[in-house]
Length: 511
Image 1 (cartoon, rainbow, N blue to C red):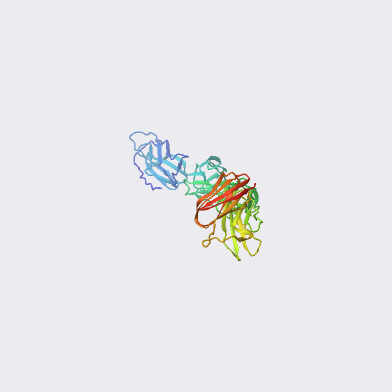
Image 2 (tube, rainbow, N blue to C red):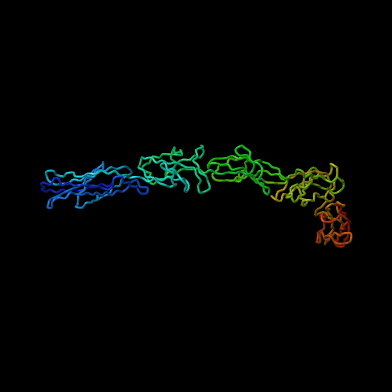
């Protein structure tokens, strides 16, 4: 408050017989009951004071003097009357929040014997208040303020050291969440002011005592989001079935919604292994990338959490076995995987020769429905002194591009001939095995020198059925598959033309 200095005007005069000519009225602003609001976040409000009076009439040509006295309770102020009936103090008052009771007195001079006489007085009480707001921690909604339900962001006027009564209301927000006042012990709700939690203000209904720094401040209800969480398995190309444990209890996938207060946790446990329709599924990771089967998730939003699985064909039921004709090329048989998305099979071989096992070698890839492969490099034997041959029929699952695990079956065999840059055939030849066949057979041919090779299949009437090859080949050993799936049972002729070598062999398809 600025210091105010007044000069009191006094006049000396002779006045006889008019001692009853006193003032009739005096008043001042602020009026009784006026409220002043501290602007913005200021801790004071600026008060300009005005005072008014109504004087009695008095005879002309008499000397007259008057002054006003303002009593604030902390200091008195004086002001001369300048001849009008409304005056303003030359300075202003910057007042902090509080209740103020001020008195204005009027003193008039009529004669020297009486001097200045108090002729009127008035007392006014007025208030300087803060504006405080109550709001939710999200946009919009409703809140309880001073016992009434109001829109979030509403305000109330208070004096320092008075209490503000607020209450949080559970409700839907505009972001798709239901908000609650949480008191379950984890991430509890709390009232805030100046964006700082108020110590101990964890009750839904709270009474706050206004401090000198609170003008323009907002009491914020820290309502917590109630998050909907579901869990599911993911089997690529199959669906989301199976089971998941949530907080120790087993549920079908996808689970029902679990409601979790934001900042709280929920624990889920995936099953490691499933077997469905010829495919083995093993757990790989949760949707957040974690690879532990049991995982505790901290929830802060609506969420669907997925346990991902990788599928690959199983070896169970494949039943890899071999032909039984000793001295003949080795025949490998298997049963197709029941899943029709297993579309191919790789034939792998490893050879253990003289006690030393060599690397695995991919021999061929055949389609679904073939169920048989002939290895013309070796013939079947029953002697332990021959090579130990290991064969794996590796199924391919087209949905995920995965193969079954290696699972080798063993048999004894003897190599028919050495192949390599140091050896080559000494004469042209062609043969087929098996013959008779169903539905396919392997045609083997040998070239002692570089040749333009043409191999064709004819029926018994001499009609060309299929040309198997027509290209230049280097000297060496070769084989190719002839598939008779689309042909009728009967006798067919296979011919080879390589340089000057021409030969025909009979093939018998038996269905």
